[in-house]
Image (cartoon, rainbow, N blue to C red; front, side, top):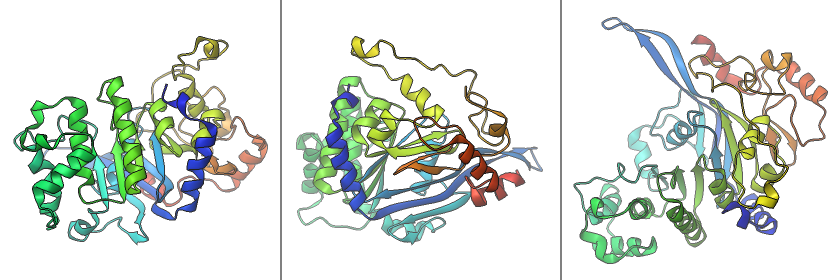
Length: 375
C-alpha cells in the first residue's frame, strides 16, 4: 500500500535531487568470503562461503538506495562491510573521497560520527541494563563531545525528534514496545548528526501499522537533517516507498540497479521480475490478469555457487551461454543497469549482449575472480 501512494512525479523529483548530489559513498568490486576449515588441532581451509562476491555501486548525497533480495543473498553482509563492522576480503570502499576499506579502528573512530547504522532487531540492539539516557548519550561520551545544553537536554531533544517523550530518559528498554525501541535506536544513531545511515531491515521486526510510522519518520528526518540512506530490506513495498534507487542482489551479486519507478515498472532481470510478481496488490481489479512467477528449486549454496550466471539454475530464460559466460552488470537504458544475457523490457538485442559478454568474460567481477579461484 505504501508503494501505491508514490506518484511518478514524486519519483522524478526525488531522482533529480539525487542526481545533483555528489557521491558520498562508493563501493567498487566489494566482496566477503568466510573461510570454511576442517580439523581440530591443525585447521586447514577447505573452501569459502562467498557471501558477497564483487558488488559495485555509488550513493549520492541526500539519496536513499534500497538494497533488496532474498534472505542469504548478502545484503546485511554488504551493509556491515560498508560500516566496517566486517573486514572486506577484497574490493574498495570510498567515503567522501577517502579509502576506508582497510582503515584501522583507531582511524575509523572519528569517521563514526558521519557513519551510523540502524540495526534490524530493536530488542537485542539495546542494552537492557542501561537507561534510555545512557544508551542514546553513549555516542557523546565515546566521541568526547560535550553538548552545549548538557547530556540530558541533548538526549531529551533527540527523543522528541523521533517522537518519544523526554520523560522516557530514565526508563529501561523493557518498558517500551518494539516500535518505541526502534525509535530509541534511531535517536542513538542521530546523536552525532551523521551524513550516512545504513538501515538494516529497520521495520521488518515491527507490526505493519508501526512500520509506516517508522518509515515516515525516517523520511522526515532525511529532509530535516539532509541524511543519506542505504536501506536494506526484503519488503519491496517499503523499499519502493522510501528509496530513490533500488539495487537487487542475488547470491552475493548485484543483478540490477535502477531508479525506483523504472525498476518497478520495467524490471529487466528475470529475478527482479519474479520478486515483483510476488508483491501483494490490494486492488482486485489490478490483480486480474497478473502472472505470478514461481521460481523452481532453492537458492544454491554460497559455498558452491553456480558458474557464470548464478541465477541460471532457477531462470526460465536460461540458455547454454548462461552456464558458460557470466553476464556483466551494464547499462541497458539511461540509469538502468542489469546483468543478464536475455533481459526483459529493453530494446537492446540479446545477440549484442551475449557477444559483448563473450568478448569480456568475468567483467562482472573483475579482480574478484582471483580470490574466488583460490577457494
